[in-house]
Length: 370
Ligand code: PLP
Image 1 (cartoon, rainbow, N blue to C red):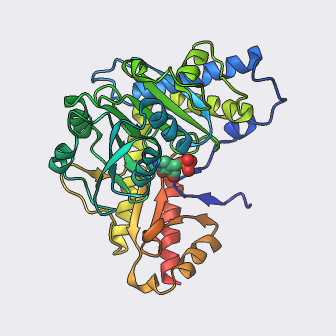
Image 2 (tube, helix red, strand yellow):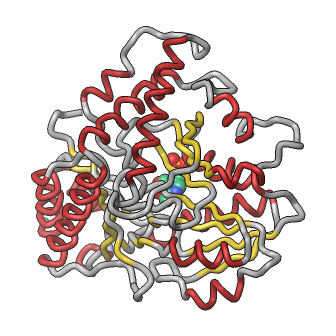
C-alpha cells in the first residue's frame, strides 16, 4: 500500500500513526491492571466525546455510562435491542436506508416490529411516525446519520415522540458520534451506539455504547447472562473491566484515538467535519453532479458522509469509474443494496486534512473525465 493511498470510504477511516502504534505493544492479560488502565482511558475519552457532542453553551447532564464491546456496531445494535425487549414487546423501527433496515431486521429476531419505512434517500414524515408510535410501543429504533444515503435524520423530533409514549429510544450514531452534534440527553436517547472505525478514527473490531442511567432499570437482568448482557458489562465497566476476553490491541488503539479527539476538542472537530462535508458537496456540485438525498425541513445533509448520484456518463459501466478512482490511489464507495450502480459515497470522518478533501474531489473529477 503506497504512502499516498487515501481512504475515503465511510469506514474504516484513516488512523493516525499514534493510534496504529498503540496496537504494537507487548500483550497483557485482559485481567491485568495495565488493561484496566487502558479501558479507563478509553472510557474517559468516550465520556468526553459523548458529553461534548452537545454544544457546550447548551444543556449537558451526561447521566450515563460509556461501554466498549468486542464486536462492531451491529453487535452494539443487537445488544441494545436484546437487552431492552422480549418477544411480547412492540418495537417501531424507522427505515430510510440500509442501516435502519438492519436495525429493523435485528429487532424482528427479538420482538414484534412495526416498521415506518420510506424510500431510501428520503426523509421521514414526522406525522406518520407519530401515528405509528403509541402507548403500546416499548422501543423505537432509528439511525441518526444514514451512511447508505448521506441523510442526517431528526433524532430530536423522534425522541420527543418516543418519550410522549414512554417508549425506550435507541439510536445508531455510528457515523455521527465523534464527528457531529449528538445531544444524547436533550434527545432522550436511552442507548446510543457507535463503531470504533468511523468518526472515532480507530481500527475496526469494537463498538462503543452509551447507556443512559434512566435506561438501566429497563435492562432485563432476569434472563441468563449472554455475550451482550449490558447489565453485566455495566457492572464490570464500573471497575474498568469487561465480562469476557477483550480485544486488547483494539482497546489500546481506541484509548489513543479518543484522547486525540479530546486534544482537538469536539467543537473544533464538529466544525471541521461540517466544513469538509460542505467542501465535498460544493466540489461535486461544481462538477455538475447531483446530490442523492431528497430532503425536507426535518432532515439535513450528513456532515460526515456525502452521497452523490452517478452521472449518466458512467452508469453503463460504473466499475470503470470506480477502477479509475482506485488507480489514482483513492478509495471511495459505491451504493449499497439496490443503490449499487446508482450512487457513490465519500467520507470525511476522522482526521482528514483539507488537502485530502480537495484531492478526493479532484480524483473523482479526473476519473469521470477518463
Ligand atoms: N450503522 C451505520 C449507520 C453504519 O454506517 C454501519 C456501518 O457502516 C453500521 C451500523 C454497522 O457497522 P458494522 O458493519 O461495523 O457492524
